[in-house]
Length: 177
Image 1 (tube, rainbow, N blue to C red):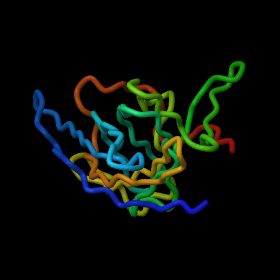
Image 2: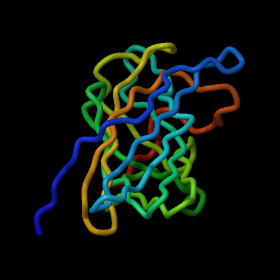
Image 3: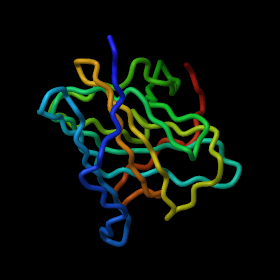
Image 4: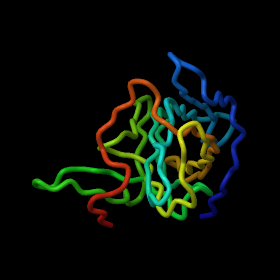
């Protein structure tokens, strides 16, 4: 079976909208689902946690809502040598982090939150520090139930918006694959 990767036109990107003095970003794009109909994935409250010189990793966080069942199968950015969808979870009394094999399901109509301490995008081997106020290009790759692949290009602000959860460290304590 041949799978075609489609580059998407983004309907809307509103980068760094000021909300109570804090930058927040959102984007919406149409993902092809075959034929004339399309599935939509909304990306909201997206940001990258700032980093300091010498720091090798950080996280990107967002809320993803798909109108039709889709899977987030990959991520890339020129800001890091490695970008992966990860999960953090407790195993016994140890917090472990690892890449999500096969991608992350985005069930139809349900918001999946990528947040500190849970599912997130891990950026490793950072090429430079990511100071608050900068922006990071990020490409999300999706696959629908029929195997059709698509991608969504975003530009995320660096720095958490007001009310964003704190907590999980920016770099892994125990990285397991």
